[in-house]
Length: 216
Image (cartoon, one colour):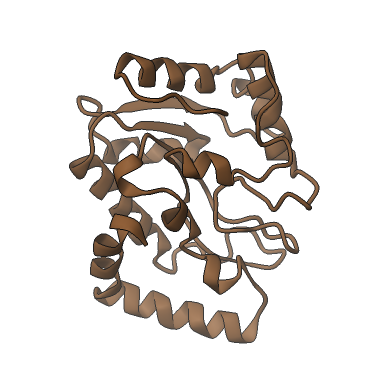
């Protein structure tokens, strides 16, 4: 699991995580849970810690059949793009004057370029958004954010929507960059996600640090 293994192993040894794991195991046995168990930590397996450039924070996985794949906002290429993804693609087109390389909604190529697509809750019950809220995932992902904050430099955090923006307090802005906007869902995209230009702004920051830009 690249160099995330150390922190994830450390979290898994803690009491809160053991309780979380027990709860999650039970739910996978008794209800339909997304993503597939093997994909819970997929974001970490695709984005190498040493290559980390951008963190995009989501809330919890998609709760529809076959949508969640372990990457925030991303869906398999054979699934119709969910409304939030449609709006992300619209903003990319408007911001960069080009279509995204991920028009099919599968953001794997972003992840491989150093974009950590992290949900604050890593599992969900079918058709029940936020059903795994307060089981312990938030402690886990807060600790991941703190670890990035302490052990990396010049990471760009794209925080969309109030729950993601609330994580700003975990990030030292003298070491890192935070770009905030309303969530890309149809309920809030028109309140400032459209026009936020986060994709070009992130690339401008990367250029200023002599880092390879992201092919969005």
